Length: 234
Image (cartoon, rainbow, N blue to C red):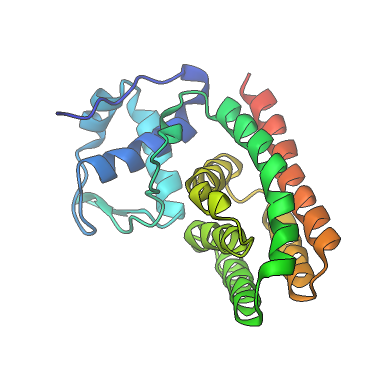
């Protein structure tokens, strides 16, 4: 059965087309190093103008997913951002509304998860969280694709909560991290690095309230940016 690529809201084109392109790469099983269809063909597939395809490709080039070879075309460089999405959340059309709804779920869940990780993580697990925090910061500052490691950071905290139901919900966190990152597009470098570090440090010292507050601040920065960007798109 052929995968159906939905037409998108004209106000929110570029972030939606980014997600659609990543889904296309996954569904069509386009291997790393393989060439994508032409700009004209992609515009036809997704029902948008070629300029929108061009902007989406440019953004995915910056994120390390695609590579444009002048005179040859656009090639898949990495599939690191093509996230397992068993709940189908990535297919929601309005990405800003999706981001806000994901925030509502995350603010209920992740601050308490971080607090639980302080109590239940062993020394080795805490050190792994710190290593992931370091890696996200390094990739962010070097201008490289940090999203996979960002997802691992949040997933590692969830796994350390000691709650098996929380572990089942990790794909929701993955989708949220990817959605937020695609929309904010590196506009929260300083805030992300600082709050990740505060979360990690609190977990290392077993400070449940500190980890909870740091996670709330981390999510709040994302919410504020999503709201601001959403208003600009209206």
